[in-house]
Image 1 (cartoon, helix red, strand yellow):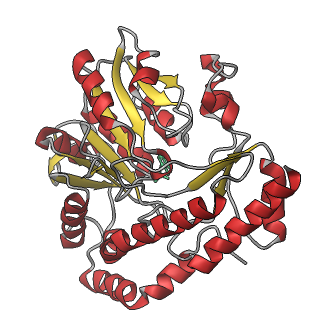
Image 2 (tube, helix red, strand yellow):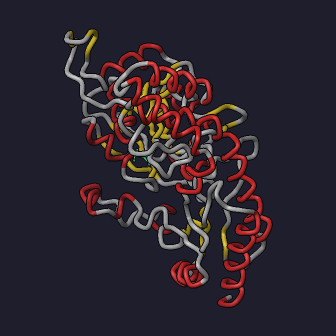
Image 3 (cartoon, helix red, strand yellow):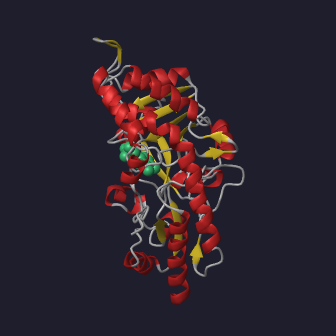
Length: 368
Ligand SMILES: *Cc1c(COP(=O)(O)O)cnc(C)c1O
């Protein structure tokens, strides 16, 4: 059996560190706020090369809080890629703003300057760049466009911990970056968790206040916020895991390199591309094939798990029927039935990666 994701084997590989972090936090009764949070926030900021980090309840809240902290004009439009998890767009609506989907680049699966330009209007005030699957979006051209047009840039880094664009970690290249620590992400908590990073002190301060009831002191509230905080146990677990994250991402890249080498040239398969001068986070290794469902079944019959990210493009969801974009002739709308995510993670051995690749190749060569 080759697992898509294996959180139990990850836990076993670092069990003493995790167990100690949990028991110490409980001994300290450091559940909300406190030293564990501060330590994680400062180490995660350093890891992502950002000046500030604010923990919050989950990655969806992180986007919503970041949007709120930017104080965009009410009702303004926010451009969101049509191929993402629903959080990226859901947060826009929750923040009282208007979702405007844009198509994604078939090579990178991310937004680029041209795709954003195609969807700009007078009312556009921000762009949510999703570094989907861990691929660093072309931030240079996106930031240039944002500066020309006076737009804010939010980086949804839920799948891109540790990934780099031109040697820089993601998140604080735009105005503000958001992270999820959902258990299956590259850096996962043992429950929900999220964080916001930025180099702008005012944004960081507003995010912290929004997520903590708008308070300045225990019972002194400047405005109505909400309750969305990272808790002490999750922060302690995340700190213990953060020490291993770079190694785990290197391992993901090794597995990806094996897949790319073993699957290169296979007929009818589109493989992920590597960023020219960046570091892919390889949260997911996504291929495209016209035989997606058959291949998925073939892999399952060989004991190999796989996934689909995502089976229905956002504009085609019932939730977005109101936008009338379900039939737009977009890569995102067309490609959802071709996508297949192969097993990916530090739990895989090189031999397992070769076994997966051989099973994929055997199937596509057979049906081809
Ligand atoms: C997982 C994910 C989120 C949301 O994170 P949660 O912590 O589950 O709320 C947001 N955006 C993307 C692209 C994701 O993959």
